[in-house]
Image (cartoon, rainbow, N blue to C red; front, side):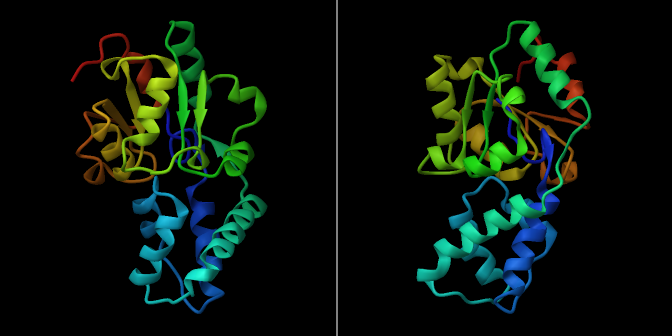
Length: 210
């Protein structure tokens, strides 16, 4: 099960730029690290945390529009690239007979901006932040994918890049491999394994165990 932002697509800098531009509109700003460390949460959960952290204010009744505007801004400014060998690695795992799923906290429109229809075919199941009530670090996103695919938890391996994603995988009882793509390994110590690049995954299967 693959996370999207920071694992497959190099998009988080644009999420930061969108958040920062929106916050500047209300007289504040955010740091890129703050966005990386909240990755995996739903935007409606992230916004109150950022408002508090950076001493900004926004009436609650304006939160929905703020988030929708932020998401639209992201789609407008993002110039997305994929991490080297990301899709090639997924294709190789599928050739070996593995089931693959995409489990992302981002809105479905943002997912569709990031992954074209041809690459979406590489996944047996795709779940976005619009499809669950509780985002990461809740186990709900990964457990929803597991149940839909008819797999046992012990058969599932999660590929993540963020602390909250690692926590979500462990809360679901799954093995987690963290990719050191956006944050250093000091932030990823709770993962079962840490790799530098996604193509290293091909050396893990089928021998991957805790």
